[in-house]
Each structure stands twice: as C-alpha cells, then as structure tokens.
Length: 204
Image 1 (cartoon, rainbow, N blue to C red):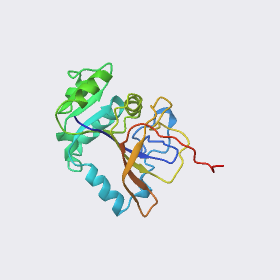
Image 2: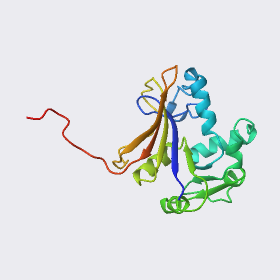
Image 3: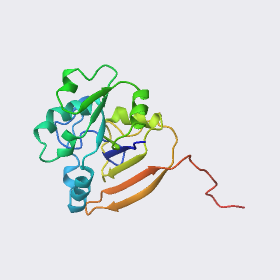
Image 4: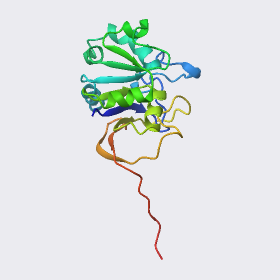
C-alpha cells in the first residue's frame, strides 16, 4: 500500500495559499502571495531539497493547473515533478483532456474510490502539495498517512486553509522536528490511531 503524504507550508492560523509568489494564486483577493520568502535559511532549503526527490503526486485541479504551466519549463530545479507520475483529482476532467495530456506522466482520477484504489496499488508513495480542497477531502476520509508541515511565524488572517471542520478526529505522532533560524517549525507527523482523552486537571 502506498502512503499519502501531505506536504504544506502554513501560517500560524493554518493558511496555505500562494506561499511561492505574488501571482501564484490570487483567488478571493489574496494579496500575500510569496509569504514564505523571508523565512528561507540553510536548514529550510536543505529540507525542501530533500522533499523534492522524485515521487508520485496526487494533486488538486487548481494546483495542477498552476504547476502544469510552470514546471515543464523549470525542470532543472525539480526534475522529479516532470518524471514522476501525477494524478489530478477532478470530477470533470479525464486523462485525454488537453490540460492533463499536455504534461507528461499525468492522469485524471474522479472519485474518492479512485483515490483509495490508487493508494492500494503498487508504486511510489503519493505526495500532495498545495491542493487545499483535495487535502480536506483526504482528511475527511482518513486517507492521510503523514503530514510534513512547515509552520511559519505569521498570521495571514484570510486565505485557503489546510484543515476544515469536516476533518475526522485523528491522532498523529511527531516523528521529526526542527526549528530554523527564522523561526519556522518543521514537523513531520504520522497517523497514529484514535484520539485518546483523559482528565488533565488536578485530582481530588
């Protein structure tokens, strides 16, 4: 079984929209695109480079549209994204559509059942970058095995978020963590069963 790994750069209030640049995603009037740029350092850069090793990719339609226009022209920086298999989740597209067929190694999938079948098929682990709506769907159906988060020390106040009220209650275990010189918390979590509760207050 493949793992589904969500990789996300988020603010303290969970916003993940347009971390890379001002024009990346301005939907709903978002004006802070490129908000991760001031927080790069050697540790941050090394972590990103490790995460860019070739994998297979499960992407939402919006992220796929942005990437299909950019990464085929910038493969020297991230060769893996062009060579790895890419699966775009869309209820309206199929693999023969120009958007999908125009980027090599790309296929469309259309349902949660398709995602489950893909997860249960042989192959490399599936990385999910961006794709806020898809991530929410995966969390709603308990399909996320690991979270790789970079938590930045700022509040954006508005924008697309990583989590939603539809996420199922789920426990995760911290497997790796570090803090960069610019205050970014880099943390990796893996799914760890049900939520456990208890009384944390003083006992009589």
